[in-house]
Length: 94
Image (cartoon, rainbow, N blue to C red; front, side):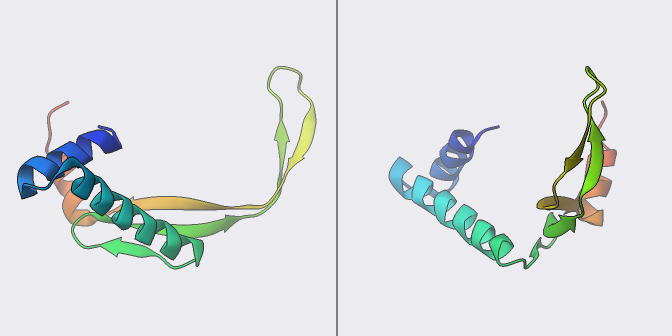
């Protein structure tokens, strides 16, 4: 599923125009991104939580050339699914 599919689903479920549904999706994503930019977690009950965490610098290796180099410190976003949703997913047949 891509963002266009989400917009289309919202159009059908809420009876909005394509532009209105697209604007709603963009607003939600912008709120999530701006909150994460500030370093705050985003929690959606029953779905999961996004958190920003720091990774320290470390030594990496190019597997092809075996050349060693330092990987710079960075901030990454991680997603943790809720226990409720994780339980629903685990019940699905592969």
